Structures are given as structure tokens and as C-alpha cells.
Amino acid sequence: MAKFFGFLLIVLLIAVPLGGLEFLSTHSTLAFGSPPKAIGEATPVTVRIENPHGARRISAFVEQGGVRLPLEESKSPADRFKFWRKHLPPADFHFTAGRAKTAALKEGKAKLIVEAESNDLRGSLDSISTDVDVIFRPPSVTTDSFQHYINQGGSEMALLTPSGSWTEAGVRVGDHFYPSFPMAGSQERVALFAMPWDAPRDTAPFVVVRNAAGTEAKTQFWYKVFPKKFRARDLPIDDAFLNKVVNQIDPSGSGDLLDRFLKINGEMRRENNKTLADLRLKTAGHFLWSEPFLQLANSKVESAFADVRSYIYKGKKVDQQTHLGFDLAVGQHTPVPAANDGKIVWAAMLGIYGNCVVVDHGLGLQSIYAHLSEIAVKEGQSVKRGEALGKSGSTGLAGGDHLHFSMQVDGVQVNPIEWWDAHWIHDHVRVSLAANGRE
Ligand SMILES: [Zn+2]
Image (cartoon, rainbow, N blue to C red; front, side, top):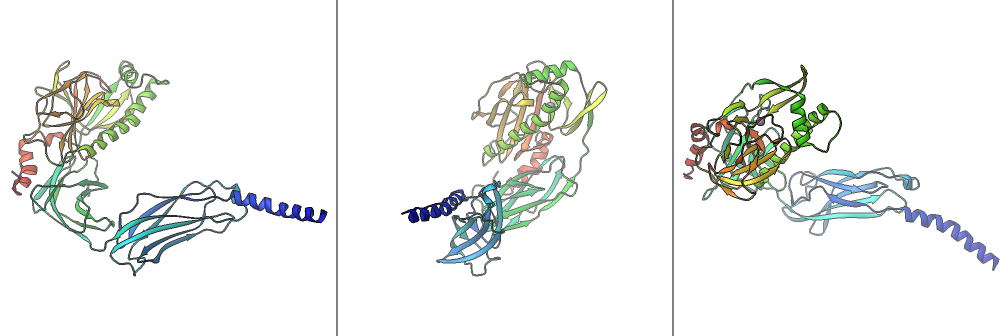
């Protein structure tokens, strides 16, 4: 009997720690960065793997007709004993899937699989998979034959005709992709785009088309960019101004007045501009307007588009920002008309812009009205050109009563001066559409 208990003790002495180690082994959680719907020649894929012990092996496969074709594998030295002290952060596994990796791949349906083996005693195997289409047919695109004269900081329109296998078509300027929209009764599509005020000199616009597998084709239209010199202005600020704007925009903040102002003028300005840019996703797929845009009547232009402002406090320059709009002053609480027909996509407080209204005019084109003393419209409402959106004021980052007016194309702020100009619209927008029997 004693022998038996002795044996049992030995078994327990061995089994409990091993069982404990077993218990300390862990599973991996896998997630696609964005699950690919299709793969082609070499489609980039990312999978995030979360396992505090890490993975000793990660493998990617594509499965087609019951056959597993290997794509990529990553191995780490095995760690069977010290793993339980590890608390590794999630790691991204990047690989490419497609014919470049496995020549046996055929067009049609397939399954993309990623496996991770836990880097600990048990080495638990976990996996993720998704159904994909395998597409090798490339997309292609042609563009219009117009002459595109583009102002730095301005807007332009191009027509394009995608064909083959494609899912996205538009114009790329620098890093920004401007989507195109279908035109009724035509294979052609239309894209508005901007040449940003701060784009490097040699920035070229491209017409780009992509398929679901990430294969891209591009082409170019004839264009010429006119560089612009923007104005530099000193903007003196004093304690009265700082007190007014800081206490209104950030009433619960504390600390040095100038520091709070600089945070509003920098960090909050960037956040607010991002909120404005994200409204591009709320645009209509066709133009909602037909007349040129209205400029606030009888107004004095206090600031123009892309003025570079140096903020001077107690005789010293404390900040510099680019002013991406027009400051138009008339008088106290002047009715502010919609510059054109459209739909309200924002009607609320927005940080430095105070009470702010944004009107969508379709195809990514939007107008922005800031510092209003009151707002007379609601989000989702349609407005007509000249209809009152509210009244001018000095809410947000504003010294006195004025309207800050700005426009954006797919979230990139542009010089509104072109959109106020019937000739510019005729030459850059209407001609292109007219050539397609749209007008
Ligand atoms: Zn302004």
C-alpha cells in the first residue's frame, strides 16, 4: 500500500507541474486586417495574431479544389519552458497571396487560410480563413482628351472609362485617391479632384483603376499645373482675444492661457479638419447644383485661401497656421446664404469653427460656413442657392463677427474662388459634362 502511495506521489509530482505548464499554454486569436474579397497576382494581406506567448510558426495557404497551396511561412525559435513569463503584444503577419507565390492557382473560388502555432509547451494550433475569388484579369482605364489647366490649391474634373475586372476607379493626386462616380447612360465616369495648396511642385494627377485583388492600372490626361504664391500675414493676438476664444472653446481646461490657445490652434484644428474631411463619405453621387456658387454679398475679404498666418503675442511669433478659407465680413449677424443647392451634412458646433454648417453639393464637393451666431438648418435637410443657413457671428476661433467660408473636394480644402467664377466652371466643369451629352 505504501508502495502504491509512493507511486501516486511520484505521479502527482510529475503530472501536476506538467499539467500546470499545460494550463499555462495559450491559444492564438487571429483576425484579418481587412478580409480580402479577392486575390490576384500578388495581393497584400495582413493578419493580426494575438498570443501572449507569441507564435512559433505562422503559415498562410490558399485552398482550391481540396488542395492546399502554401503561400508563406514565418518561424520563431521554439520556447517550451520560459514562455509563461512572456506577455507579448499582438503582432501583424504580412504576406502576399496570389499566382506570384503559387503558380498552380487558378481563376475561380478559393479559401485563404492562416494558421498560428502557439510558442509554448502545448503549441496550440489556431487558424482563420476566408472565402476569396481568384482574379487574374487586369483592370484597364482610358481617360478624356481635354486640356486640364489646374491651379495649385484648386479643383479639376476628369472623365474616365474603366474596363476589365475593376472595383475602384478615380484620380490619384499624391497619396489621395479621389473616387469617380457613374454618369447616367454612359460607360464614362466623372471624378472631381484637388491639387492641394501644399502639394510638392512635381505632383502629377493619375487616373487609376483597381480590381478586388489589388491589381492596379493607371493612365494620364493632358494637364498643366499653375503654381501659386500664397500670402503671409501677421496676426497679433492679445490676452483679451485669448480669454475670449480659450474660455469659449475649452471652458473646462486649465493651465497657462497661451498653452491652451496653442493646443486649440494646433491639435484641435487638426481634429476639426479631420471631422470636416470625413464628411466626404456623405456626398451625393451626382451634382445637386447648376448655377455658379454665391459669394457673401457686399462682404469685405479679411483673409484669403491658404494665407500663412504668423500669430504674434507680446511681440513674439508663437505659432503659424495656414488659413484654408475666406474670411468675409459684412456686419453683425448678417444672414448667411447657401452658396448653392445641396444637402446639409453638418449643422452643429465644431471646435475652432464654432457653429458650423456644411452643405454637400455632390461628387465630393462641399461648402463650409463657420463662426455662425445662429444655425437655421438641420442635418439631412435640402437647401436652395441663396437660402439662409444662419447668421454670421464670432463663435469658435474668431476675433470679430465674420463668415469663414471654405470649400472641399473629397475632404481636401480648395480655393473657393474658382467655384465663384462662372467662366471657370464653364471651362472646367460644364464643358466636360456637355461633351458627354449630360447637358
Ligand atoms: Zn477664417
